[in-house]
Image 1 (cartoon, helix red, strand yellow):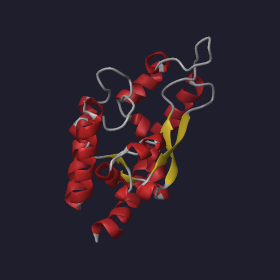
Image 2 (image 1 turned 45 degrees about the vertical axis):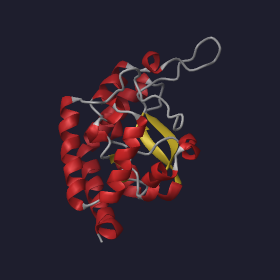
Image 3 (image 1 turned 90 degrees about the vertical axis):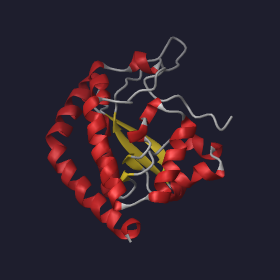
Image 4 (image 1 turned 30 degrees about the vertical axis):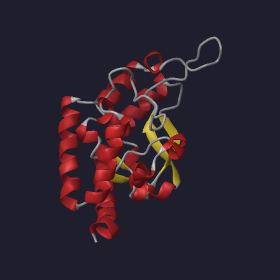
Length: 201
């Protein structure tokens, strides 16, 4: 009953309330990122949602589009802007995804929506992470986020799908608030963002 109705109900009420409360911060960040990124404060990208249905995830654009002499994008660390670095470290780049939750593409809690190109790389067990709506935060995020391996991340995602409940969602939200405050596990050891998933080797 919770997963089929009440989870979506709570998602809508909480995300709408959260967006209204955070709207001054939202506007402030949009203004600064518009200056830093030549009028492009947002980052849009297609991601797979529940049952592999594609949607456009919305995030604040924390990196610019600078390229090398060959026309290739520079590394993440070279493209990260000072304001973008602050927004990322404080997890403020996730605020626009409240709009995705309001629209129904995402949930507040669930497996994070990953790249479309990963879909054919999952094994049957890992693919079960798409049996529920993706989330702004999830069980993998409060148990290591980008600091853990892909295999472990998928194991945690599937565990969440099998154990989804109201109390688990509340626990994940509270742990997320704690981890944001201590800025734990935001980046992997080697990169600004998580290394790409290349399949089960």
